[in-house]
Length: 108
Length: 449
Image (cartoon, rainbow over all chains, first blue to last red):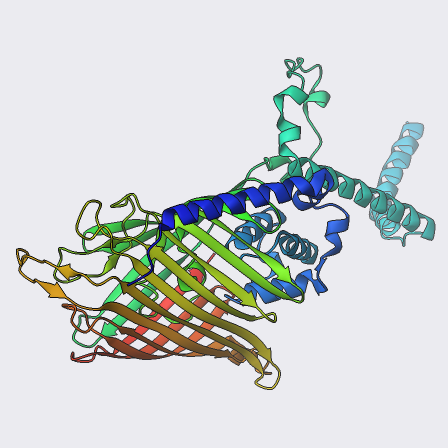
Protein backbone atom coordinates (compact mmCIF):
# COMPACT_ATOMS: atom_id res chain seq x y z
CA UNK A 1 0.00 0.00 0.00
CA UNK A 2 1.31 3.41 -0.93
CA UNK A 3 1.61 5.89 1.91
CA UNK A 4 -1.46 8.09 2.36
CA UNK A 5 -1.34 11.86 2.19
CA UNK A 6 -3.09 14.51 0.15
CA UNK A 7 -0.89 15.11 -2.88
CA UNK A 8 -2.95 18.07 -4.08
CA UNK A 9 -2.40 20.07 -0.91
CA UNK A 10 1.26 19.11 -0.82
CA UNK A 11 1.72 20.17 -4.42
CA UNK A 12 -0.18 23.40 -4.18
CA UNK A 13 1.67 24.29 -0.98
CA UNK A 14 5.03 23.47 -2.54
CA UNK A 15 4.25 25.43 -5.69
CA UNK A 16 3.07 28.41 -3.67
CA UNK A 17 6.22 28.27 -1.52
CA UNK A 18 8.49 28.00 -4.54
CA UNK A 19 6.65 30.76 -6.36
CA UNK A 20 6.83 33.01 -3.29
CA UNK A 21 10.53 32.27 -2.91
CA UNK A 22 11.02 33.14 -6.55
CA UNK A 23 9.17 36.42 -6.19
CA UNK A 24 11.24 37.33 -3.12
CA UNK A 25 14.40 36.37 -4.97
CA UNK A 26 13.30 38.42 -7.94
CA UNK A 27 12.48 41.42 -5.77
CA UNK A 28 15.81 41.19 -3.97
CA UNK A 29 17.66 41.20 -7.26
CA UNK A 30 16.99 44.92 -7.68
CA UNK A 31 16.29 46.85 -10.85
CA UNK A 32 19.86 46.72 -12.17
CA UNK A 33 20.00 42.93 -12.04
CA UNK A 34 16.51 42.64 -13.47
CA UNK A 35 17.58 44.80 -16.39
CA UNK A 36 20.61 42.58 -16.92
CA UNK A 37 18.36 39.52 -16.95
CA UNK A 38 16.00 40.85 -19.58
CA UNK A 39 18.20 42.97 -21.79
CA UNK A 40 21.32 42.07 -23.73
CA UNK A 41 23.45 44.73 -22.06
CA UNK A 42 27.03 45.39 -23.13
CA UNK A 43 28.40 43.29 -20.26
CA UNK A 44 26.10 40.35 -21.00
CA UNK A 45 27.39 40.13 -24.55
CA UNK A 46 30.54 38.59 -23.11
CA UNK A 47 29.31 35.28 -24.60
CA UNK A 48 30.59 33.35 -21.55
CA UNK A 49 29.01 31.70 -18.54
CA UNK A 50 30.93 29.98 -15.75
CA UNK A 51 34.02 29.51 -17.86
CA UNK A 52 32.19 28.10 -20.86
CA UNK A 53 31.85 30.14 -24.02
CA UNK A 54 28.54 30.62 -25.73
CA UNK A 55 29.69 28.21 -28.42
CA UNK A 56 30.49 25.51 -25.83
CA UNK A 57 27.15 26.05 -24.10
CA UNK A 58 25.36 25.89 -27.46
CA UNK A 59 27.14 22.65 -28.34
CA UNK A 60 26.79 21.02 -24.90
CA UNK A 61 23.14 21.85 -24.33
CA UNK A 62 21.73 21.38 -27.82
CA UNK A 63 23.67 18.27 -28.72
CA UNK A 64 22.48 16.47 -25.60
CA UNK A 65 19.19 15.85 -27.41
CA UNK A 66 19.60 16.56 -31.12
CA UNK A 67 21.96 17.59 -33.89
CA UNK A 68 23.01 21.19 -33.58
CA UNK A 69 21.67 23.60 -36.17
CA UNK A 70 24.09 26.11 -37.69
CA UNK A 71 23.81 29.78 -36.61
CA UNK A 72 23.03 30.80 -40.18
CA UNK A 73 19.87 28.68 -40.24
CA UNK A 74 17.75 31.34 -38.50
CA UNK A 75 17.65 35.12 -38.21
CA UNK A 76 18.59 36.93 -35.01
CA UNK A 77 14.93 37.41 -34.10
CA UNK A 78 14.18 33.72 -34.74
CA UNK A 79 17.09 32.63 -32.57
CA UNK A 80 15.70 34.76 -29.74
CA UNK A 81 12.42 32.81 -29.87
CA UNK A 82 14.01 29.39 -30.38
CA UNK A 83 16.48 29.69 -27.52
CA UNK A 84 13.71 31.06 -25.28
CA UNK A 85 11.67 27.95 -26.14
CA UNK A 86 14.66 25.67 -25.53
CA UNK A 87 15.48 27.37 -22.23
CA UNK A 88 12.07 26.26 -20.97
CA UNK A 89 12.28 22.79 -22.48
CA UNK A 90 15.86 21.95 -21.45
CA UNK A 91 15.87 23.81 -18.12
CA UNK A 92 18.91 25.93 -18.88
CA UNK A 93 19.55 29.10 -16.89
CA UNK A 94 18.93 32.64 -18.06
CA UNK A 95 22.65 33.38 -18.21
CA UNK A 96 23.21 30.34 -20.41
CA UNK A 97 20.37 31.44 -22.66
CA UNK A 98 21.90 34.88 -23.13
CA UNK A 99 25.40 33.51 -23.77
CA UNK A 100 24.04 31.07 -26.39
CA UNK A 101 21.97 33.75 -28.14
CA UNK A 102 24.93 36.14 -28.18
CA UNK A 103 27.12 33.45 -29.73
CA UNK A 104 24.54 32.53 -32.36
CA UNK A 105 24.05 36.15 -33.38
CA UNK A 106 27.75 36.87 -33.52
CA UNK A 107 28.43 33.73 -35.56
CA UNK A 108 25.85 34.50 -38.25
CA UNK B 1 29.25 80.21 -105.42
CA UNK B 2 32.85 79.15 -104.93
CA UNK B 3 32.66 80.48 -101.43
CA UNK B 4 29.54 78.42 -100.75
CA UNK B 5 31.21 75.31 -102.05
CA UNK B 6 34.18 75.97 -99.77
CA UNK B 7 31.91 76.35 -96.76
CA UNK B 8 30.00 73.16 -97.59
CA UNK B 9 33.26 71.25 -98.01
CA UNK B 10 34.55 72.58 -94.68
CA UNK B 11 31.35 71.57 -92.88
CA UNK B 12 31.39 68.08 -94.42
CA UNK B 13 35.07 67.63 -93.55
CA UNK B 14 34.44 68.71 -89.92
CA UNK B 15 31.51 66.31 -89.66
CA UNK B 16 33.58 63.45 -91.02
CA UNK B 17 36.38 64.37 -88.62
CA UNK B 18 34.01 64.39 -85.64
CA UNK B 19 32.49 61.06 -86.65
CA UNK B 20 35.88 59.48 -87.03
CA UNK B 21 37.06 60.85 -83.65
CA UNK B 22 33.92 59.92 -81.68
CA UNK B 23 34.92 56.28 -80.93
CA UNK B 24 38.34 57.44 -79.87
CA UNK B 25 36.83 60.02 -77.49
CA UNK B 26 34.48 57.39 -76.01
CA UNK B 27 37.39 55.08 -75.49
CA UNK B 28 39.28 57.86 -73.76
CA UNK B 29 36.30 58.43 -71.40
CA UNK B 30 36.09 54.67 -70.62
CA UNK B 31 39.77 54.65 -69.90
CA UNK B 32 39.30 57.53 -67.48
CA UNK B 33 36.50 55.55 -65.71
CA UNK B 34 38.79 52.56 -65.31
CA UNK B 35 41.70 54.62 -64.07
CA UNK B 36 43.09 53.44 -60.72
CA UNK B 37 41.73 55.18 -57.61
CA UNK B 38 44.24 57.42 -55.91
CA UNK B 39 45.28 56.77 -52.30
CA UNK B 40 43.45 59.90 -51.19
CA UNK B 41 40.22 58.81 -52.89
CA UNK B 42 40.55 55.36 -51.32
CA UNK B 43 41.03 56.79 -47.82
CA UNK B 44 38.02 59.06 -48.28
CA UNK B 45 35.84 56.14 -49.36
CA UNK B 46 37.09 54.02 -46.47
CA UNK B 47 36.31 56.76 -43.95
CA UNK B 48 32.85 57.13 -45.45
CA UNK B 49 32.23 53.37 -45.20
CA UNK B 50 33.34 53.28 -41.56
CA UNK B 51 31.04 56.17 -40.73
CA UNK B 52 28.15 54.29 -42.35
CA UNK B 53 28.99 51.14 -40.38
CA UNK B 54 29.00 53.10 -37.12
CA UNK B 55 25.67 54.63 -37.97
CA UNK B 56 24.21 51.21 -38.77
CA UNK B 57 25.50 49.72 -35.50
CA UNK B 58 24.05 52.57 -33.47
CA UNK B 59 20.69 52.06 -35.20
CA UNK B 60 20.80 48.34 -34.40
CA UNK B 61 21.56 49.06 -30.73
CA UNK B 62 18.71 51.54 -30.54
CA UNK B 63 16.38 48.92 -32.02
CA UNK B 64 17.55 46.22 -29.59
CA UNK B 65 17.05 48.55 -26.62
CA UNK B 66 13.60 49.44 -27.88
CA UNK B 67 12.60 45.78 -28.32
CA UNK B 68 13.92 44.88 -24.86
CA UNK B 69 11.71 47.55 -23.27
CA UNK B 70 8.46 47.12 -25.15
CA UNK B 71 6.25 48.35 -22.32
CA UNK B 72 8.11 51.62 -22.08
CA UNK B 73 8.19 52.06 -25.79
CA UNK B 74 4.52 51.36 -26.26
CA UNK B 75 2.99 52.63 -23.02
CA UNK B 76 0.24 55.06 -23.98
CA UNK B 77 1.08 57.39 -21.10
CA UNK B 78 4.64 57.83 -22.30
CA UNK B 79 3.67 58.79 -25.80
CA UNK B 80 1.78 61.86 -26.98
CA UNK B 81 -1.26 61.30 -29.12
CA UNK B 82 -0.25 61.05 -32.73
CA UNK B 83 -1.16 64.18 -34.64
CA UNK B 84 -2.77 63.86 -38.06
CA UNK B 85 -0.17 63.64 -40.75
CA UNK B 86 0.28 66.93 -42.61
CA UNK B 87 -0.50 66.88 -46.32
CA UNK B 88 2.45 66.22 -48.52
CA UNK B 89 3.92 69.42 -49.87
CA UNK B 90 6.05 68.01 -52.61
CA UNK B 91 6.85 64.62 -54.14
CA UNK B 92 10.38 64.82 -52.70
CA UNK B 93 9.03 64.90 -49.11
CA UNK B 94 6.62 62.00 -49.74
CA UNK B 95 9.19 59.64 -51.19
CA UNK B 96 11.32 58.39 -48.28
CA UNK B 97 14.79 57.09 -49.07
CA UNK B 98 15.27 53.30 -49.16
CA UNK B 99 15.92 51.88 -45.68
CA UNK B 100 19.35 50.58 -44.81
CA UNK B 101 17.82 48.10 -42.36
CA UNK B 102 14.40 47.03 -43.65
CA UNK B 103 14.24 44.06 -41.23
CA UNK B 104 14.21 46.33 -38.20
CA UNK B 105 11.38 48.40 -39.58
CA UNK B 106 9.14 45.41 -40.26
CA UNK B 107 9.56 43.81 -36.82
CA UNK B 108 7.05 44.49 -34.08
CA UNK B 109 7.54 43.97 -30.39
CA UNK B 110 6.21 40.40 -30.45
CA UNK B 111 7.89 37.52 -32.22
CA UNK B 112 6.29 34.53 -33.87
CA UNK B 113 7.82 31.41 -35.34
CA UNK B 114 6.53 28.12 -36.71
CA UNK B 115 8.83 25.18 -36.04
CA UNK B 116 8.09 21.45 -35.92
CA UNK B 117 8.49 18.53 -38.28
CA UNK B 118 6.86 16.43 -40.95
CA UNK B 119 7.39 12.74 -41.65
CA UNK B 120 6.44 9.86 -43.90
CA UNK B 121 6.81 6.28 -42.69
CA UNK B 122 6.47 2.86 -44.28
CA UNK B 123 6.01 -0.16 -42.03
CA UNK B 124 5.90 -3.83 -43.04
CA UNK B 125 5.14 -5.99 -40.00
CA UNK B 126 4.62 -9.73 -39.74
CA UNK B 127 0.92 -10.70 -39.48
CA UNK B 128 -0.15 -7.15 -40.35
CA UNK B 129 -0.81 -5.33 -43.60
CA UNK B 130 2.07 -3.11 -44.65
CA UNK B 131 1.23 0.56 -44.82
CA UNK B 132 2.45 4.07 -45.47
CA UNK B 133 1.58 6.86 -43.08
CA UNK B 134 2.37 10.53 -42.82
CA UNK B 135 2.03 13.31 -40.28
CA UNK B 136 2.63 17.03 -39.93
CA UNK B 137 3.51 18.42 -36.53
CA UNK B 138 3.76 22.21 -36.47
CA UNK B 139 4.91 23.99 -33.32
CA UNK B 140 3.74 27.59 -32.90
CA UNK B 141 5.95 29.83 -30.81
CA UNK B 142 4.85 33.32 -29.77
CA UNK B 143 7.26 35.41 -27.71
CA UNK B 144 4.94 38.14 -26.52
CA UNK B 145 7.65 39.71 -24.37
CA UNK B 146 11.22 38.70 -23.51
CA UNK B 147 9.91 36.78 -20.48
CA UNK B 148 6.60 35.53 -21.83
CA UNK B 149 6.18 32.68 -24.30
CA UNK B 150 3.19 30.80 -25.63
CA UNK B 151 3.89 27.56 -27.46
CA UNK B 152 1.71 24.88 -28.92
CA UNK B 153 2.13 21.76 -31.03
CA UNK B 154 -0.56 20.19 -33.16
CA UNK B 155 -0.32 16.75 -34.72
CA UNK B 156 -2.10 16.22 -38.01
CA UNK B 157 -2.16 12.62 -39.15
CA UNK B 158 -4.02 10.77 -41.87
CA UNK B 159 -6.26 7.90 -40.83
CA UNK B 160 -9.06 5.77 -42.23
CA UNK B 161 -11.62 8.36 -41.22
CA UNK B 162 -9.78 11.33 -42.72
CA UNK B 163 -7.35 13.52 -40.83
CA UNK B 164 -6.82 13.13 -37.10
CA UNK B 165 -5.99 16.34 -35.28
CA UNK B 166 -4.38 16.21 -31.85
CA UNK B 167 -3.30 18.97 -29.52
CA UNK B 168 0.06 17.80 -28.21
CA UNK B 169 0.53 20.77 -25.94
CA UNK B 170 -0.45 24.42 -25.51
CA UNK B 171 1.15 26.30 -22.65
CA UNK B 172 2.11 29.75 -21.45
CA UNK B 173 5.42 30.14 -19.65
CA UNK B 174 6.83 33.09 -17.74
CA UNK B 175 10.52 33.47 -16.93
CA UNK B 176 10.40 34.58 -13.31
CA UNK B 177 14.16 34.93 -13.09
CA UNK B 178 17.30 33.18 -14.30
CA UNK B 179 16.49 30.00 -12.40
CA UNK B 180 12.70 29.75 -12.20
CA UNK B 181 10.10 29.45 -14.94
CA UNK B 182 6.38 29.22 -14.30
CA UNK B 183 4.05 27.54 -16.76
CA UNK B 184 0.39 26.60 -17.18
CA UNK B 185 -1.72 24.84 -19.76
CA UNK B 186 -1.48 21.55 -21.59
CA UNK B 187 2.12 20.48 -21.50
CA UNK B 188 4.35 17.53 -22.26
CA UNK B 189 4.75 15.62 -18.99
CA UNK B 190 7.94 16.86 -17.32
CA UNK B 191 8.21 13.56 -15.42
CA UNK B 192 8.72 11.66 -18.68
CA UNK B 193 11.97 12.83 -20.25
CA UNK B 194 11.47 10.82 -23.44
CA UNK B 195 8.24 12.61 -24.23
CA UNK B 196 9.58 16.02 -23.30
CA UNK B 197 12.87 15.87 -25.15
CA UNK B 198 13.23 12.93 -27.53
CA UNK B 199 9.83 11.99 -28.97
CA UNK B 200 9.93 14.36 -31.96
CA UNK B 201 10.76 12.12 -34.88
CA UNK B 202 13.57 14.34 -36.17
CA UNK B 203 15.19 13.91 -32.72
CA UNK B 204 14.22 10.28 -32.07
CA UNK B 205 16.84 8.34 -34.03
CA UNK B 206 14.68 5.32 -34.90
CA UNK B 207 11.46 5.41 -36.94
CA UNK B 208 9.31 4.36 -33.97
CA UNK B 209 9.31 5.14 -30.26
CA UNK B 210 10.21 2.78 -27.41
CA UNK B 211 7.75 0.68 -25.45
CA UNK B 212 6.60 1.65 -21.97
CA UNK B 213 7.72 5.30 -22.06
CA UNK B 214 5.64 6.16 -25.15
CA UNK B 215 2.07 4.92 -25.59
CA UNK B 216 2.78 2.94 -22.43
CA UNK B 217 2.11 3.56 -18.77
CA UNK B 218 3.77 6.97 -18.38
CA UNK B 219 2.03 10.33 -18.78
CA UNK B 220 2.58 12.21 -22.04
CA UNK B 221 0.34 15.29 -22.23
CA UNK B 222 -0.88 16.72 -18.94
CA UNK B 223 -3.09 19.68 -18.10
CA UNK B 224 -2.00 21.73 -15.13
CA UNK B 225 0.65 24.13 -13.84
CA UNK B 226 4.37 23.75 -13.43
CA UNK B 227 7.46 25.36 -11.98
CA UNK B 228 10.84 24.53 -13.51
CA UNK B 229 14.37 25.69 -14.15
CA UNK B 230 18.04 24.94 -13.82
CA UNK B 231 20.86 26.12 -11.62
CA UNK B 232 24.60 25.55 -11.16
CA UNK B 233 26.06 23.63 -8.23
CA UNK B 234 29.76 24.44 -8.26
CA UNK B 235 31.12 23.09 -11.52
CA UNK B 236 28.06 20.86 -12.02
CA UNK B 237 24.47 21.66 -12.94
CA UNK B 238 21.03 20.54 -11.86
CA UNK B 239 17.54 21.07 -13.19
CA UNK B 240 14.04 20.50 -11.92
CA UNK B 241 10.40 20.53 -13.00
CA UNK B 242 7.43 20.02 -10.67
CA UNK B 243 3.79 20.09 -11.64
CA UNK B 244 0.20 19.67 -10.53
CA UNK B 245 -2.19 18.23 -13.10
CA UNK B 246 -5.59 16.63 -13.54
CA UNK B 247 -3.90 13.25 -13.42
CA UNK B 248 -4.85 9.89 -14.92
CA UNK B 249 -8.13 8.00 -14.67
CA UNK B 250 -8.22 4.33 -13.63
CA UNK B 251 -9.87 2.06 -16.17
CA UNK B 252 -12.38 -0.14 -14.33
CA UNK B 253 -15.10 -1.00 -16.84
CA UNK B 254 -13.22 -2.12 -19.94
CA UNK B 255 -12.08 -5.76 -19.64
CA UNK B 256 -9.38 -5.13 -22.23
CA UNK B 257 -7.69 -2.43 -20.21
CA UNK B 258 -8.87 -2.92 -16.66
CA UNK B 259 -6.38 -1.57 -14.14
CA UNK B 260 -4.63 0.64 -16.68
CA UNK B 261 -4.12 4.36 -16.15
CA UNK B 262 -5.76 6.47 -18.83
CA UNK B 263 -3.71 9.65 -19.24
CA UNK B 264 -6.14 11.23 -21.72
CA UNK B 265 -8.16 12.29 -18.71
CA UNK B 266 -8.04 15.94 -19.67
CA UNK B 267 -11.26 17.04 -17.99
CA UNK B 268 -10.50 15.02 -14.84
CA UNK B 269 -12.64 12.47 -13.07
CA UNK B 270 -12.17 13.69 -9.49
CA UNK B 271 -11.17 16.66 -7.35
CA UNK B 272 -7.84 15.16 -6.50
CA UNK B 273 -4.89 16.39 -8.53
CA UNK B 274 -1.80 14.49 -9.55
CA UNK B 275 1.62 15.69 -8.44
CA UNK B 276 4.73 14.95 -10.41
CA UNK B 277 8.09 16.14 -11.49
CA UNK B 278 11.62 15.33 -12.43
CA UNK B 279 15.02 16.32 -11.13
CA UNK B 280 18.11 16.05 -13.31
CA UNK B 281 21.79 16.28 -12.49
CA UNK B 282 24.65 16.97 -14.91
CA UNK B 283 27.97 16.05 -13.26
CA UNK B 284 29.86 16.96 -16.44
CA UNK B 285 28.69 18.50 -19.71
CA UNK B 286 27.03 15.90 -21.92
CA UNK B 287 25.99 13.59 -19.07
CA UNK B 288 22.62 13.80 -17.33
CA UNK B 289 20.92 11.48 -14.88
CA UNK B 290 17.36 12.04 -13.77
CA UNK B 291 14.50 10.81 -11.63
CA UNK B 292 10.85 11.41 -12.45
CA UNK B 293 7.67 10.61 -10.53
CA UNK B 294 3.94 11.14 -10.44
CA UNK B 295 1.51 10.44 -7.59
CA UNK B 296 -2.23 10.48 -8.17
CA UNK B 297 -5.61 9.18 -7.08
CA UNK B 298 -6.99 7.94 -10.38
CA UNK B 299 -10.40 6.53 -9.31
CA UNK B 300 -13.68 8.15 -10.28
CA UNK B 301 -15.09 10.64 -7.78
CA UNK B 302 -17.39 8.90 -5.28
CA UNK B 303 -16.70 5.43 -6.62
CA UNK B 304 -15.31 2.50 -4.70
CA UNK B 305 -11.96 3.24 -6.40
CA UNK B 306 -11.77 6.87 -5.25
CA UNK B 307 -9.25 6.18 -2.49
CA UNK B 308 -6.81 4.19 -4.61
CA UNK B 309 -3.42 5.72 -5.22
CA UNK B 310 -1.05 5.33 -8.12
CA UNK B 311 2.68 5.93 -8.14
CA UNK B 312 4.83 6.14 -11.24
CA UNK B 313 8.61 6.42 -11.08
CA UNK B 314 11.25 6.68 -13.74
CA UNK B 315 15.02 6.91 -13.89
CA UNK B 316 16.99 8.03 -16.93
CA UNK B 317 20.53 8.38 -18.20
CA UNK B 318 21.60 10.48 -21.16
CA UNK B 319 25.17 10.68 -22.42
CA UNK B 320 26.50 12.44 -25.49
CA UNK B 321 30.22 12.33 -26.19
CA UNK B 322 32.44 13.33 -29.08
CA UNK B 323 35.29 10.83 -29.20
CA UNK B 324 38.57 11.28 -31.08
CA UNK B 325 39.37 7.63 -30.43
CA UNK B 326 36.10 6.46 -32.00
CA UNK B 327 36.26 9.22 -34.60
CA UNK B 328 32.69 10.20 -33.98
CA UNK B 329 29.86 10.94 -31.61
CA UNK B 330 28.31 8.43 -29.24
CA UNK B 331 24.81 8.86 -27.81
CA UNK B 332 23.39 6.77 -25.01
CA UNK B 333 19.80 7.23 -23.89
CA UNK B 334 18.16 4.95 -21.32
CA UNK B 335 15.00 5.22 -19.27
CA UNK B 336 13.29 2.69 -17.05
CA UNK B 337 9.95 3.16 -15.31
CA UNK B 338 7.73 1.49 -12.74
CA UNK B 339 4.03 1.93 -12.16
CA UNK B 340 1.91 0.75 -9.26
CA UNK B 341 -1.77 1.13 -8.45
CA UNK B 342 -3.17 0.05 -5.08
CA UNK B 343 -4.67 -3.45 -5.08
CA UNK B 344 -8.40 -3.68 -5.47
CA UNK B 345 -11.11 -5.96 -6.84
CA UNK B 346 -12.46 -5.02 -10.25
CA UNK B 347 -16.02 -5.94 -11.26
CA UNK B 348 -16.72 -7.08 -7.72
CA UNK B 349 -20.24 -8.29 -8.54
CA UNK B 350 -19.42 -9.84 -11.90
CA UNK B 351 -21.96 -7.62 -13.61
CA UNK B 352 -19.41 -6.55 -16.23
CA UNK B 353 -18.61 -10.13 -17.13
CA UNK B 354 -14.95 -10.30 -16.15
CA UNK B 355 -15.02 -10.21 -12.37
CA UNK B 356 -14.48 -10.47 -9.60
CA UNK B 357 -10.88 -9.79 -10.64
CA UNK B 358 -7.99 -8.99 -8.38
CA UNK B 359 -4.36 -8.73 -9.37
CA UNK B 360 -1.18 -7.00 -8.34
CA UNK B 361 -1.30 -3.91 -10.53
CA UNK B 362 2.41 -3.34 -11.17
CA UNK B 363 4.02 -2.59 -14.50
CA UNK B 364 7.54 -1.84 -15.54
CA UNK B 365 9.44 -1.22 -18.72
CA UNK B 366 11.85 1.00 -20.53
CA UNK B 367 14.56 1.17 -23.13
CA UNK B 368 18.26 1.57 -23.69
CA UNK B 369 19.61 2.98 -26.94
CA UNK B 370 23.15 3.35 -28.27
CA UNK B 371 23.93 5.42 -31.37
CA UNK B 372 27.17 6.14 -33.16
CA UNK B 373 27.84 8.67 -35.91
CA UNK B 374 31.34 8.85 -37.44
CA UNK B 375 31.51 12.65 -37.45
CA UNK B 376 35.32 12.75 -37.44
CA UNK B 377 36.21 10.35 -40.24
CA UNK B 378 37.92 11.74 -43.33
CA UNK B 379 35.31 10.55 -45.82
CA UNK B 380 32.61 13.19 -45.82
CA UNK B 381 29.92 10.84 -47.14
CA UNK B 382 30.32 8.51 -44.15
CA UNK B 383 29.89 11.35 -41.65
CA UNK B 384 26.21 11.54 -42.52
CA UNK B 385 25.45 7.97 -41.43
CA UNK B 386 24.39 7.03 -37.94
CA UNK B 387 23.96 3.49 -36.60
CA UNK B 388 21.54 2.77 -33.78
CA UNK B 389 20.71 -0.22 -31.63
CA UNK B 390 17.85 -0.22 -29.12
CA UNK B 391 16.41 -2.63 -26.61
CA UNK B 392 13.00 -1.94 -25.15
CA UNK B 393 10.51 -3.98 -23.20
CA UNK B 394 7.26 -3.87 -21.27
CA UNK B 395 6.08 -6.01 -18.36
CA UNK B 396 2.38 -6.00 -17.55
CA UNK B 397 0.62 -7.57 -14.53
CA UNK B 398 0.51 -11.33 -15.17
CA UNK B 399 -3.17 -11.70 -14.23
CA UNK B 400 -4.45 -8.59 -16.00
CA UNK B 401 -6.66 -9.52 -18.98
CA UNK B 402 -5.26 -8.82 -22.46
CA UNK B 403 -2.06 -7.45 -20.96
CA UNK B 404 0.84 -8.88 -22.93
CA UNK B 405 4.50 -8.53 -22.10
CA UNK B 406 6.66 -7.48 -24.98
CA UNK B 407 10.37 -7.30 -25.75
CA UNK B 408 12.03 -5.82 -28.83
CA UNK B 409 15.44 -5.34 -30.35
CA UNK B 410 15.87 -2.80 -33.11
CA UNK B 411 18.75 -2.09 -35.46
CA UNK B 412 18.66 1.13 -37.43
CA UNK B 413 20.66 3.16 -39.88
CA UNK B 414 20.08 6.86 -40.52
CA UNK B 415 21.39 9.06 -43.30
CA UNK B 416 21.36 12.73 -42.31
CA UNK B 417 20.68 15.06 -45.21
CA UNK B 418 20.87 18.03 -42.83
CA UNK B 419 20.91 18.71 -39.10
CA UNK B 420 17.20 17.89 -38.82
CA UNK B 421 16.46 15.97 -42.00
CA UNK B 422 17.03 12.24 -42.16
CA UNK B 423 16.26 9.05 -44.01
CA UNK B 424 15.91 6.15 -41.57
CA UNK B 425 15.67 2.41 -42.03
CA UNK B 426 15.30 -0.11 -39.23
CA UNK B 427 14.59 -3.75 -38.58
CA UNK B 428 12.74 -4.69 -35.43
CA UNK B 429 12.67 -8.06 -33.69
CA UNK B 430 9.43 -7.96 -31.71
CA UNK B 431 8.33 -10.86 -29.54
CA UNK B 432 5.10 -10.36 -27.60
CA UNK B 433 4.86 -13.00 -24.87
CA UNK B 434 2.83 -16.01 -26.04
CA UNK B 435 2.12 -14.46 -29.42
CA UNK B 436 3.64 -14.89 -32.89
CA UNK B 437 6.45 -12.47 -33.55
CA UNK B 438 5.65 -9.11 -35.11
CA UNK B 439 9.05 -8.39 -36.58
CA UNK B 440 8.98 -5.35 -38.79
CA UNK B 441 10.85 -3.30 -41.37
CA UNK B 442 10.44 0.45 -40.99
CA UNK B 443 11.50 3.18 -43.39
CA UNK B 444 11.03 6.84 -42.63
CA UNK B 445 11.80 10.25 -44.09
CA UNK B 446 11.61 13.11 -41.62
CA UNK B 447 12.33 16.81 -41.75
CA UNK B 448 12.49 19.17 -38.79
CA UNK B 449 12.15 22.88 -39.40
